[in-house]
Length: 430
Image (cartoon, rainbow, N blue to C red; front, side):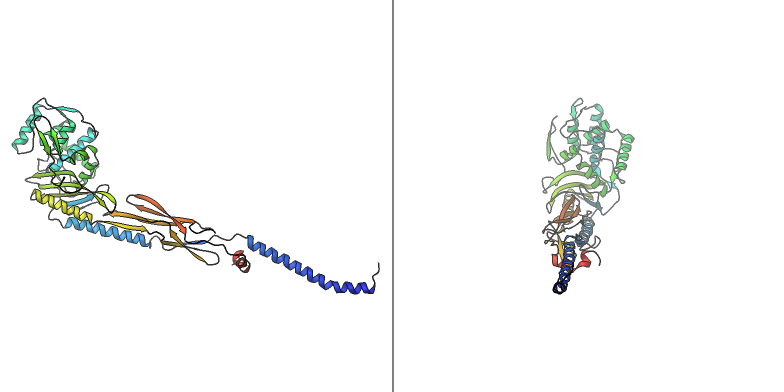
């Protein structure tokens, strides 16, 4: 088929336009594909960074400094005493003392005797326990203690006495004859008794404790002030003893009538819940006592012991002073402040989003205790403000807890223009 000159000229005029259109179309297709690729390519999640390391965390450093200061205060409290003294808190293994010498403990020995006896013959808090029939041997012990000016309560031979009655007389007015009768029945006498106490003391880490007999009348019944505090803690954890030592008075039959607790601080000093006095010529005036208190919202039990004081009033005064000093050896430490900055989320385009604590946490520390926290950042994604990105694990003497970590602001994904103009970052070439 032949074309005319006119047709050929028209075709020549159309060719540049077609080339331009094809080029424009090709460019559009390429740019469109590039734009789509930029738009749909997943971007990496924001990078999370902690504000400080665990070792440099200000909260941990503050808690450690507080713990050290409280330990120093506790030691200063006992160091200020005029004689052997020790303190500690129920639930803690730590004890502070100014004198580790074993000294005569007199009737504080009865706490040990009852603890050993109850281990061998347990008694529930609401039980009266087995009945002991008062024997001629028991009556002879009563006469012997009376001859030594020891506390004793004569009752007729054949009298039936429950275990609870024996312990009540032993721990409240500190009756030696009833304590000896209880020990003979549950533990044994002489060497058998001493060996049983020694074995019990070893198991409980009481290296200074030694008892020759159950009442404390023997001057060779000794322990350090620190071990007396440890004995008291064991006694407070025994329900029967814990109940009796906080009883101000009790009514007994057989003509005995009302007996009163020898603890001079019971009912006189707020919060005092026992424990035991001990007095003899060799021991002087001893006292171990416990006090319930509130330390910045935390319920605690303080335990204090003084040995070898010159009088009953002196031992009461010194024990009260120890309790006051223990009140100064507590502190509340803020481990997490609400909205506290703990890290940063950095997006691909360099925007920094603060990561903050979504709540707070504090600990009340006693001397010898510690607290800490650890911040863990998991992951963050494009999304709204307050999204959870990690947590703060808080460890205190009362347990563990967790405070969420959230993004303080919205983590906005880069717009299309930024994607198109930053291909190296979008496609990972950089």
